[in-house]
Image 1 (cartoon, helix red, strand yellow):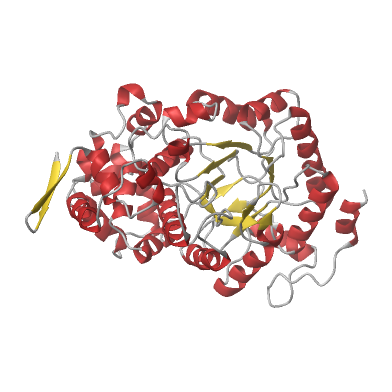
Image 2 (image 1 turned 180 degrees about the vertical axis):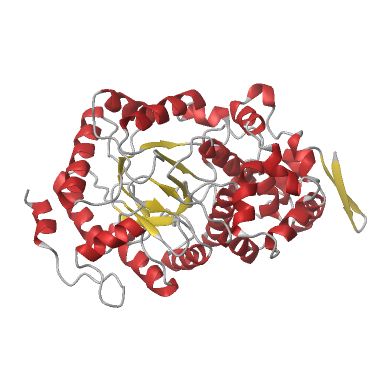
Length: 458
């Protein structure tokens, strides 16, 4: 039992899950679940209490029981005690102060990452300002590789997202051409298929691989089908680079996605056996988002930000190339407006990076949220300043298949110019060979090379 007294009022917090929930900055999902603080005063009381909780106590207090949840078992059983040792004597508040100090260098944070449990990252998040989250995340470098190296310092990669409402190959090819000419695609060329048909997925995978080979692009492709569909296609010889799956922070939520940890392990081993990478062997691509467990009625009484951090523990176990929080996609029931989306995006990025996860963010919102493109411009700039690994590149920032608003190819160019960020090194060299980078080092397509135009006629 935790408690705090403010004035004459005592605020009790019955267990760790309750304390973490009450300490969370306000968001609609926690209100919907009945977990949010009932007042600003109660929230501040919870934050004061949380700051004094010893990190070591979180080794033994589990927000979801070890016996009933395989994600909890993964978190506990894989915890690196040696990596944790340098911060073992700290409280949550002291950990935050250390992370903001000059002692928390990039190498120190990399060594620490395996020792950070998700509940520790979530707890620090809840007592941190947005500026704190940016400063702490910017110190973390998590670089991964397949055919390109994503996440190196001074780099900003882009997932080229050429979705089409009917999976029309010419429409998809036109979007890919547009994105490549504007420097997108070094993180992945990834299609959300309109259906999860194995035949359709195979056709799209083959098309992507054909484009990659014809243009000799040092990147990876992915069709974001369910992991079972991708496993079936690997067995049939389809050209699979990355295995995609949406994941969450509870066993029950993952079950609602039709997955478990054993299935993810099987898929990773199958993709590794293909040996398709050239500069690395990171073959998994995961997507997450605050509210996914609640939307499946599988949140187990835990707040959505803590559960999001637990999803990163799932991701970390499978050494992914890319992890992407689709921060505003689930809707205003979970993140009501631009303010809540902004906070969540910076929280997710910080927690993932602190835990050693290669974080990207889909800076996005649905059309019924109280948000607009100005909110997304602001969040995008904050994330790039904080060192996000990759963002989305969607034609016109409007995904016509999924029906939500994201970031465009031109948004990525603007951020690269504004912050001096470059694409992945292998992809940058390719852009130079194509004549798509000018003498000052900026991506400026003056014309479309003939073999690029052939994508639309070949």
